[in-house]
Image 1: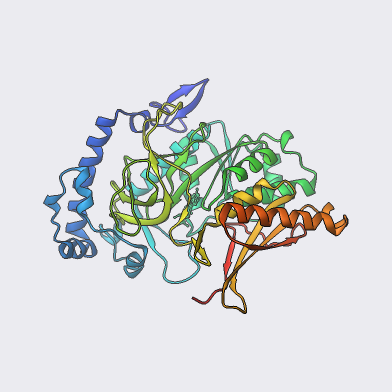
Image 2: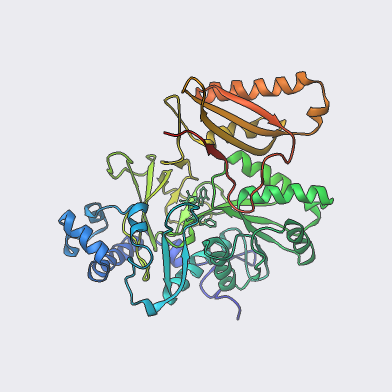
Length: 448
Ligand code: DLL
């Protein structure tokens, strides 16, 4: 039988909750399991990973000090920088011969972070990705067009393993080759698209040029993630592609995609907290913050075998909440990402997240969802910000006053919302470079 559906809940014949025991359990049971896994994992890393033994010894913490979930606060944090220093195999908690696959972080500069998977880790990855895809309504009858990059990046194979476990038909098309993507989508009756949100809009644009109408295709949902996007961008994608667009989140250091994802409520991402224990901390003091408070997201892998991580500081900013979700899942949620502690731009002393600028642009009707933010120091040595944004072609043939009006409107809205003055440059469609993967939204030319 393709896919293991024996435990999942069916709604109108469709698998909705892939693993109710894990995703819709009572809090007491969940907490008990998490605590057991944490105690086991801490003993494991202390015994098998010199990197963690040293860190714990330096902090004066012994494995026996960790008896409950609250005790996690005694453990030191792990940073990306520290993980890089363990390259390539300094984080292994198992003999190298137990590793069956490796992936690395997608950063273009510096030494990458290595995620090395055992057979057990790949099984967990498939499980959490099956949950993710099921959350978007995917089941064994679906055709999943996987346009995340295959290779060292975790997006491609993560979705692939989940789709296989689900028993869906996965088309491993990988990123790029837009014309072929559209052809495959039509000819194979793709029902679920998996790619970055910016690439989904790129596909919509290309479809338009090819005269392809999404309303005539079978596409019903998109599992989109790996880069920041906003609620307005979701609306745009849902509109253009005639689908439900779900946010999916993950990172190489933890497992890849499959850490958390949205259900049909589209109000926060359910975290697979039986495997990945989340905390929110104050990025300055490191103090653990209560549910509902915004701060830096930190994860501990409770079950990972190959390269476990303890209290990894993601630098992603969000908050956690546990609501009574209409989908029936009881696991904790994270709000969609609000930014990163490190992509935050400081423009003349004002903290600015690129996502805030995006929010403004998406509200302006005349603009296209393609933009770029360039930060530089002008002749006065003060920060200057330039926002390049595409506007519909017709405005360029109109009188210049129309363009000037749009420019002013954007500039005023950015000023009133963010408190900064930005120079707005309106450009013709297709001027800004498109990306097959994560879009490069910010070019920071400042030498600080
Ligand atoms: O981007 C894993 C992934 C693949 C997630 C496919 C979703 C879909 P990395 O390349 O290690 O892993 O990048 C991780 O990307 O810390 C976030 O800052 C950002 N990110 C990932 N998902 C989202 C999202 C993959 N849904 C880093 N919204 C993370 C905003 C995201 N940012």
